[in-house]
Image (cartoon, rainbow, N blue to C red):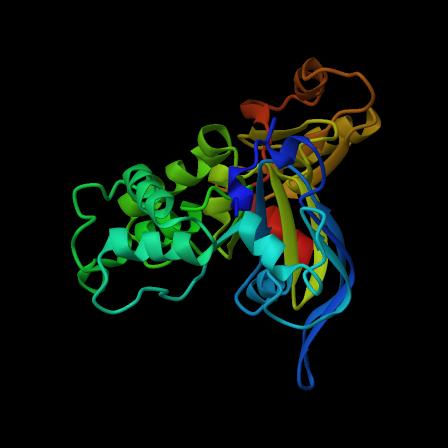
Length: 320
């Protein structure tokens, strides 16, 4: 019998349709609601599933893999997890947060075993195990027992076992957990290259804002089991609308605020060593309006540049 991964795909799924479709998904553990009526669609190459610990991220991944019962409606690559869990797992790679190694197996044996579990023939599973470990940067360590690996190497072999069967979609649960700064950047680089090099879309579940900002195009924010935002990273940080400008002065910020307000600007105070405000210009006005307002109010500008909201500030705004 031919394995599903041997089917010829003309283009990656992320170019053809919705990766995940959720309608009013509820997941309970006894009296505790881990997911509270989540409705959303995941589209794109790299999606960040962002939220603090306990937000419901891991529960959502288990629901999508058909590993946990739930209420509501869900589809992954067009399949219902309650009716077609095995079809989903044929097409989805999963890198869990916890260790998933088996005692006494080396990396090649572990990845080949994962391939065999997905239905690959023995020879194909072994071939793909070597290829996945090469991609993960473990080609020179692949015959060493995984239980003796460092934390960084274990994270890499978990990525390799998730890739071994050639999935169309990858669920990565806290993939940089426990890594030092260099190991984290190397892992994020591997993740960011997956859509182009392997044709796999990525759903990256993490509580680390830097990981999402570094790798993802789209972001879904969960907080206490509820969906609080879904969209692009620029939309989350507010970059889609009119540009705001950071203005810092030596003194006289009150006079400048009066002039800017008279000219139709929206002004908000900013913290910092120098007095400052965030300014949104009216209509099609350009930053020269700020300069003329400063001259008119006899204020000396010390700083004027576009204001970029950090992802951290946008996240806190979304969950507040």
